[in-house]
Amino acid sequence: AAAAAAASDSLANTVELHKLDLLDHKATAEFIQHHHPDIIIHCAAQRYPDAFESNLEESIQLNVESTRHLAQLCMSQPDYRPHLIYISTSYVFDGGVISKEFPPYVPTSVANPINNYGRSKWDGECAIRDVMNVAKSNSDCRGRGITVRVPLLYGEDCIQLDESPALEMMKVLLPTATGTTIKKKKIDNWALRFPTSCEDVAKALKLMIDRALIDKHFDGTYHVSSPHGITKYGLLQLQSQLLNVPKSELDERAVGNDDNPSAANPSAAPRPQCTQLNCEETWSALGCQVEFTTLQDGMRRSSRGFPERFIGQ
Image (cartoon, rainbow, N blue to C red; front, side, top):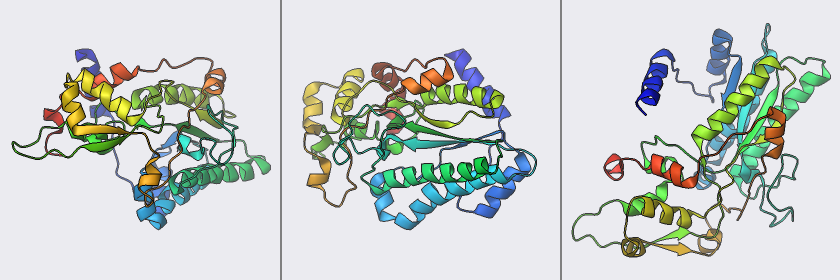
C-alpha cells in the first residue's frame, strides 16, 4: 500500500493538469493544437439522468456537441491524427422493455435508450461514427474513434459519497445528531446494476491505448463491465456489513423498494431494469482480459475512513 501511495504521489507530481471547458470550442481546439495528444479519452458528460432532464440544452451541448467537435478536431489536425476514446454508457440499451432485445448486450445489439441521458450518449456515439466515416470515405485512415460503454462506476478515492450512485446510499449510514428523528429512506431494489471500479476501467483503457498506438486501424465499440450484478439496496446491505453496521440499525434507516422508481416518481428520468454488458468481444480484440475487482473488495476500499472521511456532506 505504501509503495502504491508513493507511486501515486510521484505521478501526481509529474503530470500537469489543465482546466478546459469543452463547451468552449475555440479553447478546446487551441489546447489540442498546442499539446498534440496521441490519445484523447473523452470522459466529460452530464451523467445524472435526472439532472440531465432539468438542464436539457446545456447537457446536450456537453454530451453530444462537444463529442462531435472533439471528433472533428481529431480528424482535422494537419500533421497528425490523435485517437479519440469516447466513454459511453450501458444506458444506450432499454433492457428489452421496448426493443425486446434483452441483456447481456454485445456491441452490435440494438440501441434503444429510454431516457434523454442515454439518448445523448448514443447520439455522441453516432456523431463520432459519422465524422470517422467521412474520413474513411476520403481514404484518410489516420486516427480512429473508439467507443467504450461502461455501467455504473465507482471510485476508490471519492471525496464525496454522491460522486457515485454506487456510494451515495451510504449517506443514510452517516451519524445523526442526538434527538434527530430518522426518516427511513427507500432505496432502489428493482434495477440490477453492475458496479465497476474506475481502476478496472482504467486497466482496460490502458490495453486499448497500447493497441491503438501500434495499430492505426484499431477502432470500434467495446464493452467494459464487471460481471457482478446487484441492486442499490443490495449494495447498501453489503456496505453495511463491511462497516459492521447492525442490521437493526440499517432497518431503521433504509428499506428496499421493489417497485420501478419511475412509477413512484413520474418526474424522474425513466431507467431500464437491467442493461448488463457482454465483454467477450472486448477481450477477444485485446487478446487479454481484465480481472475485475469483487464487490466486497471494491466497497471495502471505497468506504475506507467511513464515516469520518464523509462527515459534513
